[in-house]
Length: 286
Ligand SMILES: [Zn+2]
Image (tube, rainbow, N blue to C red; front, side, top):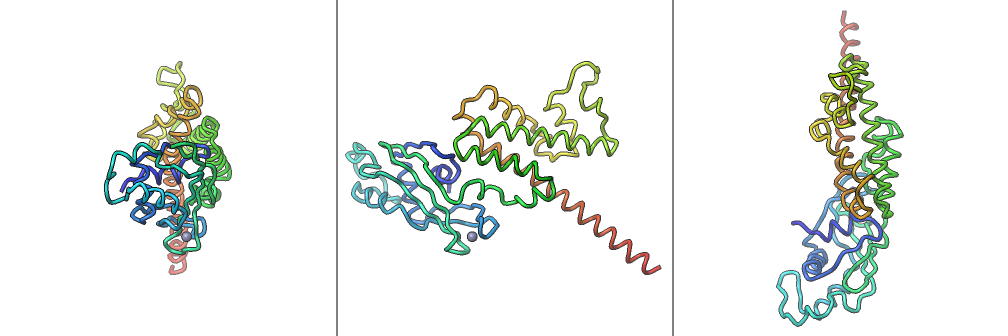
């Protein structure tokens, strides 16, 4: 079931706003009634888990019982639309619990101004929630990728839009140049082919370079190198608000790309170990 409220509650950055009208109140009541669940990385389980509502929404439930709205039924009279659905509320607080262990919680805080809620806090921080593979990134890809991704997520969670894009772009650029070194070492691509177009005069742009690395970088990026253009556009031409809004999608894309690389490198390592061990058995048996 799609629930915009859950997206906003769990993924938006600090000081993001959302207007709460009847559809949104219905979604809040679905959360209250535990009809809405969502998957999220649990920092304590260190794995993705299903989270369900724990407590906090009593004020919303009470206010809307008064207004005769329930999540199952429809708005019963037009008269209740005259007053704000958040009437009389000065804050909104939500706590969710992990389905594996009820003591693992996610908490979110919102200020209320008129019919709008503003995110003012959350615990754990999104940087702690967002990087399930943090240790793998550090050990397999090197500390720089991990540190820059973490900084990017941290900036976004504190409402810095364009700055968060700068780090995403650095990650893509580093990925492209590191991967070129691999392709060059494997004898598949020369520096000249990488840097210049066939005419030898015009330089390749970043998206052309990404395409040249097909087979070395995950298809996810070589088939859609435009992610680089979008991130660059964010830095030069988009507003803070647009960057904040688009960040979760781009960040998820980059995380998927890094995950693909981590998985491939793990497989390569396992295959290498296997070849070594098998080689030893064969030589022992001679
Ligand atoms: Zn948990």
